[in-house]
Structures are given as structure tokens and as C-alpha cells.
Length: 422
Ligand code: AMP
Image (cartoon, rainbow, N blue to C red):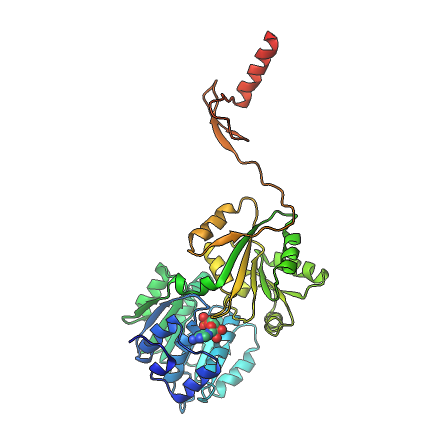
């Protein structure tokens, strides 16, 4: 059955009310495909990025599976970062707003005693980062023997961050007969290994790239060099109607310095990167969410999974190192129905990285011209064969068709010879 509306699904009135309050009118593709199998108790592998509505795709069935009268942990979601854990917990709390279900985020960087108190008071769903979950398991402050539903969110990211051992350790502590689902933007051998080990005949759901909101994102690129990068950013802010943007830099230091430069120029900017403490990160994210900050200068790791509405632009101040990061970055704008623009700065030597990105998407990425002067890159080299010694060499210009060319040593000997004769 093609699920057109949330009413087509066997959901309780309380959950439907929660979904309505969130303003969701119809299920997104990943929701339309995964909610039903999950409600039926099947294991699910969902290949989908953030921005597709995957949190509700696993959150809605998880909420429906909870026995309210049993105050022990029944649902467990593992997520790679603190920000994501908080966001998922918040999302599930909103879905379950009218059900009385208690959801608790568990992550490193926050005082453990507060979490212990919360866990003691009885929670139904725990959303946490692997490291802190292990910490609680070792202290005996979190028990997983009543867990019947487990979700691994952003599994690829968790593996990238080296959580594989922790994940195995945690999954070995939950009862064997449980429902397991796994969501990941990419699937590789190590992820399939987890699936084989912990899942039972999973349903595989793929949300293809066209279904991800790429069409709603206007993608542009702009050529820059070292000295024009910042003036170009300032011009874009003034000319492109950038109201709220995440500006991605390659390094933590770069993020810190650019935010400071923007602040000194009078912009409302702040930075988010891995060198900040958890309270600092929370403060910055909150400021950006609440519109106190217009420009968030961030590194990939810090901004991953952030779900903040109203972001009009993503600026790749430094082009991402990996093509996939590009899609994660630009996915921070155009959340669900909204539109957004992504502008990528391309310096000399980075054309290949931009071409790789272009090759991965069917949507167009067009050049954006600015009035700032950008120095031409190093002259293009052309291969040529020396007429005299027949050796191949680089020429800094395109040789004219039919005209003989000489390599430098041969050219010098020719000149000497020429001078002697005249
Ligand atoms: P996620 O991929 O779970 O991070 O969700 C991305 C954004 O889409 C979040 O802001 C959700 O609130 C929103 N969202 C999720 N499902 C729907 C839906 N069915 N209709 C409209 N918005 C949704």
C-alpha cells in the first residue's frame, strides 16, 4: 500500500496529535517506507541522509512500541554526536508529547550526576552517544535488559568516529530478541558486518538522492584566491540576501579566526568547532537556533546533523575534503519544504574537487561572479615535443599549430648558434 497520509498508518490518536503539532502533513518518502515495517516489528536498514525525515521514521514506531506503565528503558537510540543525540531526543519527545513517554538524552560533556538522576526517575527511551552509554553501563546506572527496540542513527558517522567497539559492546548487552534498525547515508563493508551480526532479515530501504531535497537547494560556486576569499564573503553577505548562514571552514582554527574577523567587521557571528567545551557548544548552537547569531562558522564535525530551521545559505568557505561532506553540509539548508542556497568557494587547484562534486549530482551547480578581483591561477601547462631532441616537455602557452617548438636547453643552443652566424 502506498502510504499517502499519517492516517493511513495504524497510529494511536496521541501520536497523531503529536505529529500534527509538529506540522507534518504527509509522510516523507523514508517515513512512508519504513514506519509500517517497523510497526510490524521488522528490522530495517534505511539508507538516508539527515533532512529526509528519518528521525520521525524511526521515532514514531519506537514511541508506539513503548509500554507506558513499565518505567524501564525499552527503546535505545545510538547517535554519533551530542548535538544529534539532543536533537533526536527532542524530536521524539515532541512526537510523544501526548503519550506521557519519557525520553532522555545521554551524552558526554554533561554532568553525569544529572543524567543518573534522570535515569533513576524512570525513562522509556534513551538517546545517547556510545561513549557515555558505556560509561553508564559500567557504573550500573543504565540497564538495557528490557530494551526491545534499538536504532543506530548515522551509522557511517559513528564508525568514522571510531565507535565500532563501543557499538558492539552495547549491542551485546541488549536482549537478543529485539528489533534493530540502522540508518546511514552510506553503506560500506563494516556497516554490513553490523547488520549481519545484529539484524534478522532486515527490510532495506533506500531513499535515492533525487528524493533528498537537493532540488530545493540552489547550488553555486565562486572562484577565489587567498586574498579575495574574505572580501568575496563580505560581498556575498551584502548582495545575496544572506540572513542566516552556516559558513564551513576546513579547520577549527580557521573557524575561530573567521568568526573573529566577521565579529570585528560588525557581523553577528560565532564559531562552532571541536575545541569548544560542551556548554560552550550548547550556548553557540542555542544562540544560532534562537536567531541571536546570524553567521555560524563551523567545522564539519561540529555542524553535522544540526537541524536548525531558517538557514538561508550554506557557504563552503573552504571546499570540503570529501565529496560526501558537501552533501552533508548543504543538507543543513532547505530543511524539508524550505528553499536554500549553497555557495562553494573554489580556489586554484580545487577545480578537480568541484568537478567531483558536480559529477555526483544531477542538479546544476553554476558559477557566481563577484566584483572582487581574483588573480588568475598559475598558467595552464601544455605538453609539447621538442623538435630537436624529441623530448616531451611543458610549455606555459598553447603552441601554434604547425610551428616548431624547442625545449629550453635546445632553444639556448639554437640561440648561441644563431648569434654566431649573424
Ligand atoms: P531529519 O531528517 O529527521 O533530521 O528531519 C529533517 C527535518 O524535517 C526536521 O526539521 C523535521 O522536523 C522535518 N520533518 C520530518 N518529517 C516531516 C514531514 N513528514 N513533513 C514535514 N517536515 C518533516
